[in-house]
Length: 285
Image (tube, rainbow, N blue to C red; front, side, top):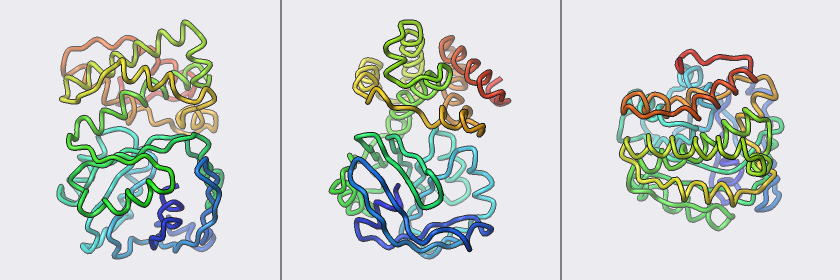
């Protein structure tokens, strides 16, 4: 979606793909979005060209193998990861330098139906970027705002990163554990109570980590979501893919241990997801 939207806004976009997929990867992106439907031309390469900005948009479970094959030229001025979770930022800074890595988050329901074909059924796409990237990225965020994105620069990194996670983790874990849409979760007293408890636990850990978050604001945001919305973790489990449990639940569980915070609802949801997926994340033990 990022590639299609940036190309639609007039930027030159190159998709960096695995070498074995290069020959057959489509040279156009088709986006069906609540913002409109369009097809754009893009370049495709197996290596990162000398671009201004590299957006890293792989699944958290795919980051390590992607980085093993990724050489970033010195001409790349900013690396903006939009992965779920928090821990990837330190990994990227260690590899590419703290000055070039500008953390960002994106929220919305988006799915790649097949290579080159992306759907975005949710009525929103929220892109937040650390203010350190303002000088380079302000024009880009203005372009995306004109398409329909809601874009903001956030001054405080813990608030930027945890601000998404306290919303995403309860949503992803609840919908996946129950295999229900967000509307169905909110209509079921038992699942709703468990999800709300997870929100409060996540916010307690986030505050201990230095973030400015409010459980009431998060719960209000969840209540305003489209009732039919489903999480990417839920879809991954349905498709027998490895869920992003460590990226999404890991920071909460590890942070809880560091700060002596009890998180029973989060642990219960993680166990339910692991049971549904037939997969146990070893780092969460």
